[in-house]
Length: 362
Image (tube, rainbow, N blue to C red; front, top):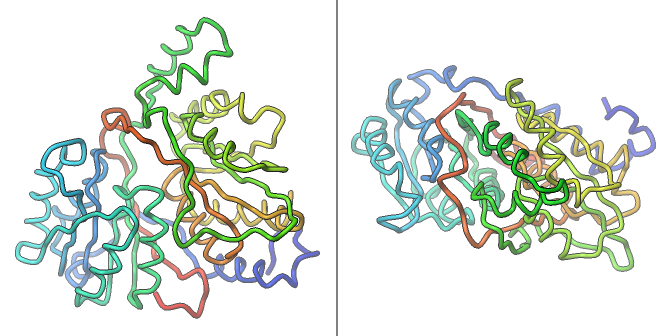
């Protein structure tokens, strides 16, 4: 087997490792498929967040069975956005693991998870990534791969994502001129504040070859300022932008809105569409970008900015774990607008974590 059109690069070790990863992975499945008997032998890890969906997996499982152990990572604050659903987290925890649950400090870099893995007895882990930040997810998945245990990843969608369609329609009517769109969106209290800084993702810094030009593969965010902070950090000779297509048909409008919001930054550059759901499909498309068309690895040092969905981030993590030269960068806001990330809880999913390199334990 080989990637379609990849004949010139079939001898590439990295390409073959990516192919091997795909053959060993499986698609996401409904969280409902996990049996009560399996949960009884499973240690559950979760991250307390400021979106309601961050408690969605715990509440679903609490109505189904008990787990052998439960660890909740939370920030050491008694008031604030990250405590909004704390009572619901604690209530679900008491049902899920009546005498075997605890909280730990969320270091937002994955180090808490690595430490806690050495303290649990269970050989099977279920890790709810919903409340984890995209930046910390890389360290968390690195730790999971090194655990030597069977690892499942759980994930909850939101009932409705921000901006809502009504918000978007209202904003479009309020524009004085089309050129104002990016500025107006950046000022809106959706998702992030406007001040951002670009950072390398720890453990996935990659490397650049001397004398080689750089290329950027960037996922479009709903805040153009996030992307602008990444673009302005380095001098890039080639760009591939990725716009996320929502899983549900009723959210299809978000794809067009995403492209329109970032038009000033992407003008004249390649913009590809990628499903926000399905990390295997995202991984396959990323490998095509690097090896097939436009085959960035042939001519450039590649930088990757995973500013998209959680499952797209999982695909980016796997790719950068296999191709160690890829530099992963992210945009970190100085201020969040936690009231305007999402509302409600949607579908909940689970998938078995596969080590990017076959001989690494999971």
